[in-house]
Length: 409
Ligand SMILES: *Cc1c(COP(=O)(O)O)cnc(C)c1O
Image 1 (cartoon, rainbow, N blue to C red):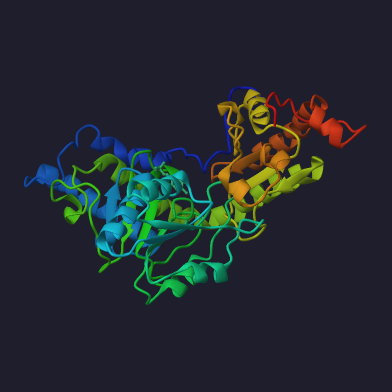
Image 2 (image 1 turned 45 degrees about the horizontal axis):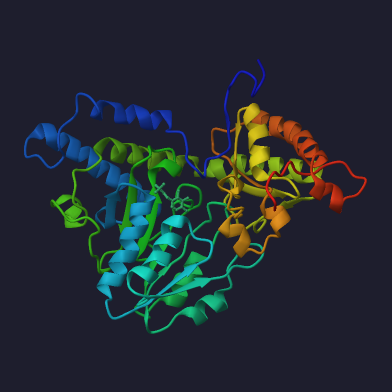
């Protein structure tokens, strides 16, 4: 049996979600069955579960250079993002300005857009543009800050392109201005080193399922001394910062996942990065009119976002799916809205290219054999699709290639 044909999945969609590491699952299992105590209980049966939560808190904090009591366990990255931003605007009720970017994950982008209308346009949102390679202009960032700015919310690494923002520099610019700094670090944690001892960030969001822990658990880091208003009020859990009985099993799993991430970060930045580069170079050199989206080096080691001009991303994904190759596309042609990804649009990627963008996001579980398989299978897929595309033929008369684009784009 060869790759892809025995329904063995080639999973390169790790920025969407990751597999729970076997080591993570193993430590979780007893807490679904025998060890079902409530960590807040006075008896030692519950107390032993509480100790595991304490241990997990230490493991997560050591991955990011935080103190254990600076972490609040949440239900997901989205909750962490919402908690940070809503807390800041409630803490600083006299400040009405928020600085963010045009390329944030919907968890931040849509919240900021809604805040503006929910508060009767009392909040002014500055969504900073990005350059064509997805990077940010620090001067423009500095100029956007005002005395009215309550919080900056800017992601550490972009989920679609992998582009890494210079968070350290931005924090430095924001420092001593009474502005809170939140970063959605969901894609960065576990992939690149983060040391909060050195970077005075106020809030940082983590999501378990992006680093081989289960779905449905997240963390909000809240720096000691940062004003905080809970998102969920209830019991005394999380030192009163988030009510609700802890998602014990997932928290224990997340602790293990963070411990593993620390040991595998080197592999991620050498072997996985080399696999990503091989895939990228193999595709770019074998497929005409293919373009890399995002900065070549200021990028996560696992992510590659490539546009295949005049082809529809969804069509490519369907063909890849036949080989059990999982990737993702930035466009949402199927919705009928014909809206390409807001990230690629913010980068000014032309329509014909944005529609045909595919994101490959690798993990430590990928192999060179899988990369070779994709480099072998994708070029003919693109050529066949282009053969059917009037747009490709129109722009490349006489050449073979193009998109089965049923939409009127
Ligand atoms: C996945 C993701 C989120 C959302 O995390 P959930 O745990 O799925 O809510 C937020 N931000 C970024 C950058 C992400 O990639």
